[in-house]
Amino acid sequence: MLVDTSHPGNIGAVARAMKNMGILELVLVKPREFPHPEATARASGADDVLQRARVVETLAEAVADCGLVLATTARTREQYFRVIEPREAAGRIIEEARAGSGAVAVVFGTERFGLSNEHLLAAHALLRIPANPDYESLNIAMAAQLIAYEIRMAWHTPGTGTVATREAPLATPAQMDMFFTHLEEVMHEADFRDRTQSGTHLMARIRRMFNRAELDANEVNILRGILSAVQNRRRRAGEGK
Amino acid sequence: MLVDTSHPGNIGAVARAMKNMGILELVLVKPREFPHPEATARASGADDVLQRARVVETLAEAVADCGLVLATTARTREQYFRVIEPREAAGRIIEEARAGSGAVAVVFGTERFGLSNEHLLAAHALLRIPANPDYESLNIAMAAQLIAYEIRMAWHTPGTGTVATREAPLATPAQMDMFFTHLEEVMHEADFRDRTQSGTHLMARIRRMFNRAELDANEVNILRGILSAVQNRRRRAGEGK
Image 1 (tube, rainbow over the protein chains, first blue to last red):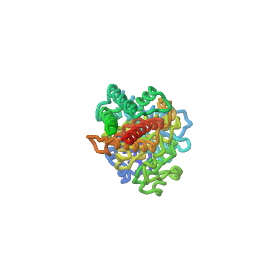
Image 2 (cartoon, rainbow over the protein chains, first blue to last red; image 1 turned 180 degrees about the horizontal axis):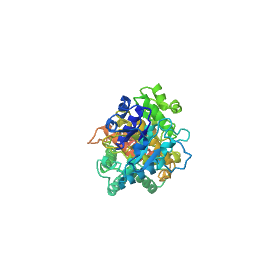
Image 3 (tube, each protein chain N blue to C red; image 1 turned 90 degrees about the vertical axis):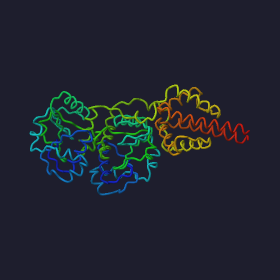
Image 4 (cartoon, each protein chain N blue to C red; image 1 turned 90 degrees about the horizontal axis):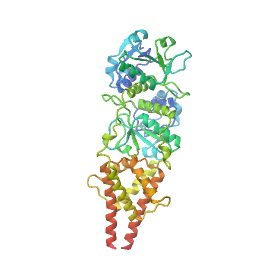
């Protein structure tokens, strides 16, 4: 819910930020200009969020049927409010949604002055984004983006997709063992001596570094191909002697 | 680090987003227009971040002396990269900062196309923001805002201790480049031919696997020592002919 928003561009940017995180219900309380071409431009594909936006005259009307109401604030307030950060707020919001306990409102004030003390009276808690104390005031769409993101994070923590990008299964420990034996053989043939540490220590370290790479089976084959090529080359050179 | 940014307004918005979270070091790689009044307008008080921004010609130049390099991406990539989300990334970034192991780079591509596959070759991991699968592409400044916010949040959280187990700082991208050149030289001298892929493709893949390992500077020295030993051995064998 955006209250008394001055710049229509910000309304568009908020719509985009919301939709990026899968949140589609926008309420505009007395926007100065709406609809507006700048709002549509900044929405950049999230025009559906703008089109279905509910426009009302007062915040009281906007929150009437809601459950939890959170009011964003950039400033410390003197009054005794519960103040929570976006992460905790998101957890609460999801909990509310799961319990089916009515729509949760996250309310943003004007770009310059935020919400008035009167507006805050509808809030169960204040939502405050941690920021640089020397430069605290976030753009309103940025604030909406952060909160929407935290809501999405709280909703589900999906896998990162790392595993899906692998071409082959992770190399098995047995395959890795064969690779390390092969590498050690090449190091030995090449008379490699590490000045700083013993052989066992060195191989353990080499294992750790390759294990961190989480090589897949094809990658181990490539590395072993390189090792074999090095050995063949040397053997051919040896025969030439 | 912003690569090939098209809209100066976005540069300003990123500067503001950074400063809001207390991050002040901006690097611009070949910005289309900079400085620019629109950048200054959108920075809205974060002009100091713009003024001290470093402007360079190539990403390689930008990251040369960095430690950890994270490349943002909106798309799933086909290659095998480690992919992390902003929260995990932020934890890593703070851990690196606490260990004093060189500047961490968070790299953003163009507004329309993101980073090229070539840009990704310097990356230890990809940074991907979880989003609505039907509408995934965040505005670049929004993405920067989320990541900067997570970095600020992580600042207050204890780390996992991974970084502390490193003996030396992460190898810089410049050191990694020298290592890859050396390895390629040895592969060439050994007449290594990969049956399945072209040379460039293969080297890109090898870069990805070693980057995933996040080698420290000493480890790179060990690997280069092995390569040198292989070369010396071969040269001695050659002289014996």
